[in-house]
Image 1 (cartoon, rainbow, N blue to C red):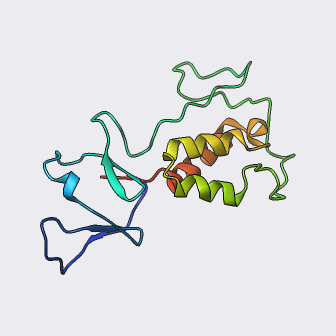
Image 2 (cartoon, one colour):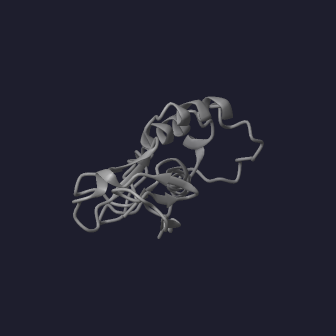
Length: 150
């Protein structure tokens, strides 16, 4: 699982002490009264409680390739895939969304899921990756831009 370093501020005089997550402080005033185990998403400068059915790992549906058969229980794609990663070369030009545009999205307070979708759409090599590599890429981007905690 994913581990996030969080600590409560020790010396605080006020109604609700802030919590520090990944070197940033967030107010806890909107968290009072929430049930134990509520999943929170970090956005802008606050923690937003998510609906009850949400999980720490956000859902991101990847359409299976045409012709890719899945297992009997439809949970995993079959091991025989038409594509593989042997032709992919890491040249740092496969992402058409630039660093400054990405940071603008983050600074504007765009939701993490929208940022992840933009990264996937602007990746030139995403469609040529295997299903496992696609899931791994999305999980890495969600961990960075769509931070969730309990």
